[in-house]
Amino acid sequence: MKLMFLGAPGAGKGTQAEIVSEKYNIPTISTGALLREAMAKGTELGKSAKSYIDAGNLVPDSVVIGIIEHRLKEDDCKDGFILDGFPRTVPQAQALDAMGVNMDLVISIEVPDEKIVTRMGGRRLCKKCGSTYHILYNPSETEGKCDKCDGELYTRADDVPEVVKERLHVYHDQTEPLKDYYASKGKLVTVEGQEQVADTTALTLAAIEKFRG
Ligand code: AMP
Image 1 (tube, protein in one colour):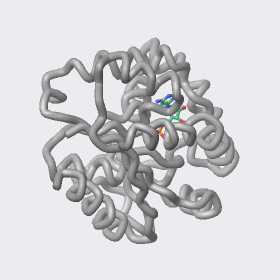
Image 2: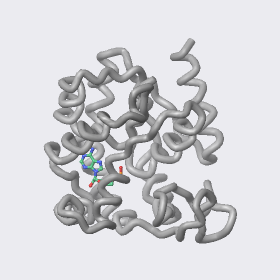
Image 3: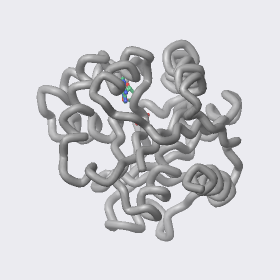
Image 4: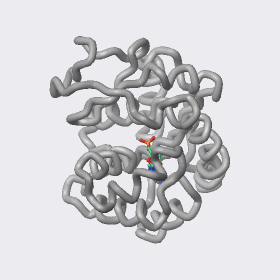
């Protein structure tokens, strides 16, 4: 199964992708996570991506398309995968088509902008494994520590309000048109993001099961 999550930054794509990934045993591929990993390692890719990410802008299409092309060739993608945060522009979606990758289902998680801005301050990530948490809606069992690997939790530099506003602007301008792109191919379903993660998960899994018939 090849699934894609669309949605504004902070809508809960990453959290849902992690849950669905465990349930169906298919990997999640997040370009944001791959870029953060490169930044943490200080690679050339990481260094060149940092200025875009810190400003809330998109990393150039050619860079992320290259990352995805490489990643999808790995063995664990053979039986399907979940795309989280890619594509983010129409040219990226076209590049995916050109690679011969046909998505089965595209799930757009809808959350109004006002809610996103207030939510983002509570978001936390694991330094070691990249798992995502929220201090109110999806807290870790021990404060500041990852449930999965005991890594330290941190707040992303691009989750501060000014950058979040820019990321939302970029989302509406460049990424939201992908909803029409996939709707016209009959692949799009929308899920209203709920306050509690488990409620959004129930809607997400229902959409996936409906597709699987
Ligand atoms: P995310 O973790 O998905 O919120 O991504 C964090 C940041 O990484 C974004 O704000 C962009 O700067 C960059 N990024 C991630 N995925 C892409 C993509 N598909 N195209 C361009 N930039 C991306």
